[in-house]
Image 1 (spheres, one colour):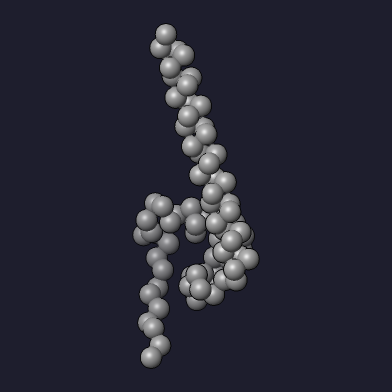
Image 2 (cartoon, rainbow, N blue to C red):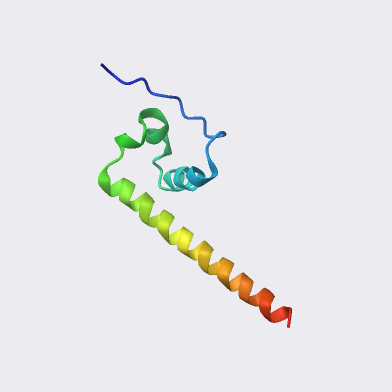
Length: 76
């Protein structure tokens, strides 16, 4: 029994998944993902997406901490 594929609406995705789709688009993989789902990507491709997501999250966290430190200094 084949599973029914849900059509992905790129305008109605959760914020936490938005980054994943943006990276897939940057890597030129978005068409395959939309047509066939995430399972159509190779382990190398999904690993690349995951690695980039991790890198961006770390950078965002680092920038947030840096921003908080600047606020603390200016409030003295």
